Length: 235
Image (tube, rainbow, N blue to C red; front, side):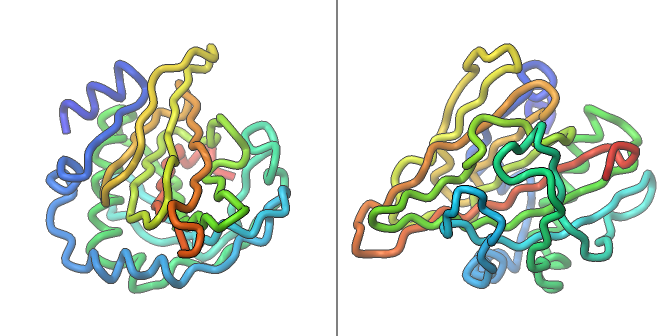
């Protein structure tokens, strides 16, 4: 963890392989059920590009100093058009993350690890936390776009993108760019628990479209995105 915090502090981002993430997260007895829950996501109907390739669920949590992370009442996800010119500017309501997934061992471990890492960079904070389950589907004739808004910031403090699984897709390369528009690195999340950690104030990120390897078979890329934002700045 010290190396991760150091990389985030120095570079503004860190790519972490799945086996290292699993060591950081510790035992996750419900991982198989956690991953399978991506088979039960609702269609994202807010896609301004008309695409029907993205499915998702959403949940909000809060954390105060000295208190455990707790789930908030279900609420919409909102981004201004400054951060999401494609789909921002409106309150978007998505199906909630299922209670057993939100309270399960995997989600609990992931949120706890995020809090421990981010609080070494910004100590003693009240946090507004958002969790997004994304499935990006790739079909014959329609590539799936993990970041249809392009290179972007999320308008938060810190971001974790954790790969849950991928099937029958190629590409999906994550690129990191400084706010001065200089490319800083790229990598591909290929194995479960491969992760990208991002300081959202310092860098932008984007992911290339995924395409099916075998067009006759379904293909998808499943990720969990976790964002932490100082509560005073929460909408």
